[in-house]
Image (cartoon, rainbow, N blue to C red; front, side, top):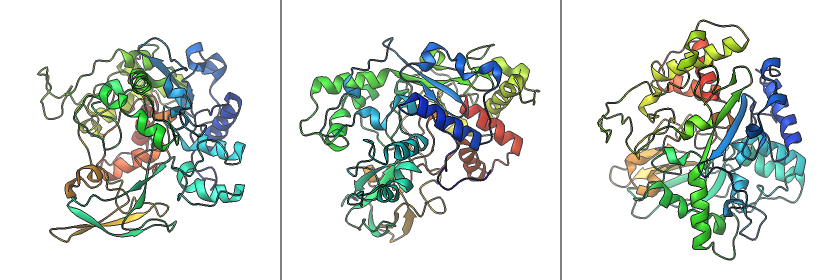
Length: 455
């Protein structure tokens, strides 16, 4: 597939405007070569819940949001402007973008608003905090490589003086970072399905449960991202945290396979909401609190489509067969369940962090700062584009480690990994195929992508 340099990402959910979003997703879907949806699963037939607040149209189909309270309350502080700029929590954690932000919608916003949408704010976006935003051309130069192409937010980072390492050197393509403070870029983690995970954020692991973590996150967001002059109240923080804790999001319809909870399949957000989860469930080390041994068959939601496994046509049966085969690859050949062990969710069921090689050369992008860290004791050096968990712990062994987030709803939130380096699910599959020496065939990689897109 040939990629136009401006349209790097071939998958996109709808933006805040349904017409514009549909136009963009059609353009990207056609660019990806997947064509229009077949007649039997026309987007004109989408159910009401798939068109409501929280729906995420994407190149593979539609993602849908539900809430454990029974409704998504758009009056919650999560959706309110609590700072001095026009942002809300939903600016970077959009219901229509899988409760994060994706690069395709950011591209649409850059084009349609000439780079003036609330997301384009130098407080935390763009390549440096003092970048030129005086013209549209300047705004493209400032935001395209980071906010648009990679869907990342910028943070000013420092290395703790008590860490086991120092920042010996930094190479910043934008000329802003120093060894005293540097720009760190990360994808906003989705504020969905957190009832099915043991911790939140890419590297966060405070000694409290998830609901307590979520109830404490609003004040910092209002102060930094919304440039709040008045702190969020305790009541607002609790209300926003409880709201985030109840959000469930999953792909509900595949353009070719149809509804993902039909014909024996158990996909979609309603089944995800009912899925059991507790800390340590299906623990890889065999320490499940209820005594269950680790089961490598992490996903079984598409067992009902096993009868289509032999179909390789371009119709509904072929699409369902690909999703089922991809599920079996995930459970066996793919070795994926070691990190994503929570049944039918794909989070890691205990607080754990993993180095999957995404924060070190050659995966580090020339568009992001490259750090040289030096061990204070051994004087060994490491190159990294993100210290990962080590920023919090200061431990040399934690460099480049991140959590394994829940996998449900992946199709709506490209690009992938902590820094958006994988533009498509196919790129994610290719990364692990190389990293884990899986030796997957081309057909197996396509099947695994189809399964991940159906989560």
